[in-house]
Image (cartoon, rainbow, N blue to C red; front, side, top):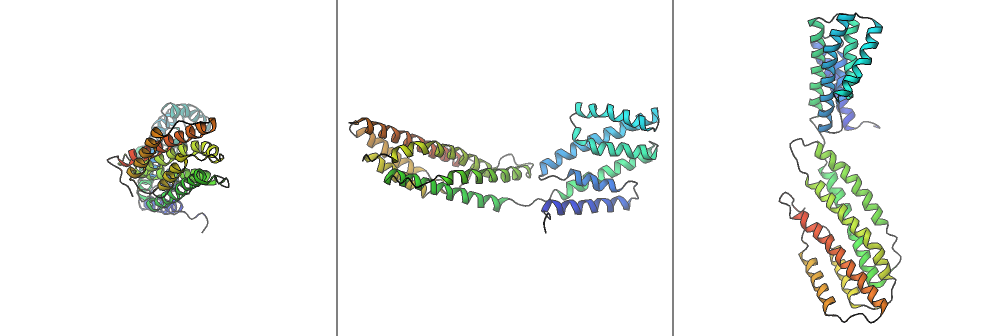
Length: 323
C-alpha cells in the first residue's frame, strides 16, 4: 500500500497504544499522548531521543511557567497571548524551540480547565510520560540496513571494476568510445549508500564506529582519484606513440579491476614497484611527445598507488574486516 512504510506503521501503533493507556487511567486530554508519539517518532533512534528531549523539557517548562502565569494574571485570552510572546524567546534561549507545539498544547490544557491544581498538573505529566514512553518503545525497533548496504557495496565494486577495466583498455588500445557514465553512476550510488549508513549509525546509540561508513568514505576518496585520472588517460590514449610503460600500466589497471572486492593490495603494489623500476632503467625520452606521455604515465602510476594505499590503510584498521 502506498505510504505504508515502516515508520507509518510504528506511528499508527504507537498512537493507538498511547490513547489506550491514557484511557485506562481516565486521563483528561488523553489524545494528546498520541500527538506526542506522532511528533516524537523520527527515522532513527538518535533523532527520536533528540526530539523527545527537546519536547519533554519544553513541555515541563511550559507547564510550570504557564501555571504560575495564569494563576497570577488570570485565565484570559490576552494573558495567553502575552504568555506565548514571552515564552517563545525562553524556548529559543534554552535551545528547545523544537518543543514549541507540544509545550503550547500543555499550556492550552491548563488554560481550558482554568485551574492549575495538583490534579491537573499531574494529569498533564502522566500524558507526557505516556506519550514519550510509547515513542521510545515503538522506535526501539528499527529495521536492519545491513543487507541494503551490502547490496550497495556490491554495486559500487562492480562500477569500480568497470571503470578500471575501461582505463586499462584506453591505455592499451586507445579506445575512445567510453563516455565515463560509470563515474556518475557510482557517485550517485555512494551518496545513497552513505545516507543509509548514517541512519544505521544513528540506530546504534552505543556503537561509536561504523565499518560500512568507513568503507564508503574510502570508496569516495578512491573515486576522487579515479576522476582526476580521466583527463590524463584521455591524453595518453589519444597518442599513437608506442611506449613500453603504457602497456605495463594497462596490465596493472586490469589486475586492480579484477580484485576491487579484495582487501589484499600486495600484488598490485608489487606490480607498481616493478613498473617504477622499469622507469628507472629505461632510456630517457628522445622526443617531446615521448617525454609528455611518459610523464603522464608516471603521474597515473602515482595516483593509482595512492588509490591502493587508501584501501590498504582502511583494511588495516583494527576494527575493520574485509568482507
